[in-house]
Image (cartoon, rainbow, N blue to C red; front, side, top):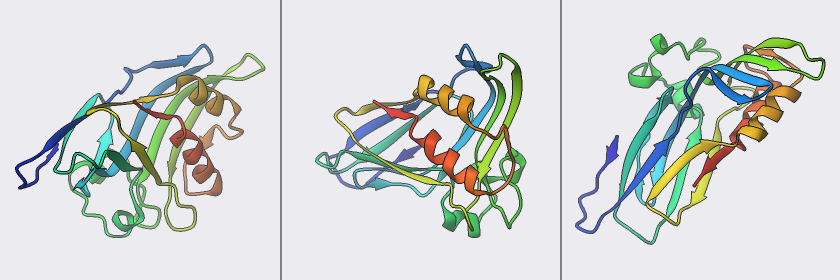
Length: 193
């Protein structure tokens, strides 16, 4: 996906979103079998897009900026509330992508499924379909100052593993306060380099 401007002086920024192959052995005690999430409203300097991208594999995006002094990458981790209330149901927001609950609950921001081994040494299944926008907003705004035109988005595996191991609920399948809290914690695992 590229964003172009009419100005003559342009700077190209490449964003490589790394997506681990499944099953993803995050640590000795966490194995993720499904890992899908939305990134929306990407912006690099003065180049913007209101598109939503469902990340379920390695993704390479190119953003073109006309002001090289503006080196901020911003995006929403999850679908923003405006798109939740006025969805267009096309592209990556198509309900057939299996990331949409209902018009009352909106989109699933992050879908994570797998197995976790807790302190008792027993492996348990987890199913986290985190979302919501009416009572418990779950999209998170991310902003990063850039020093390079080649950007990589990765996940801090140790922190992510700890969050999944310590989360008291293994099954979250609806909008709730726990979904919002967990989405904030997982957003803090995003690494932009």
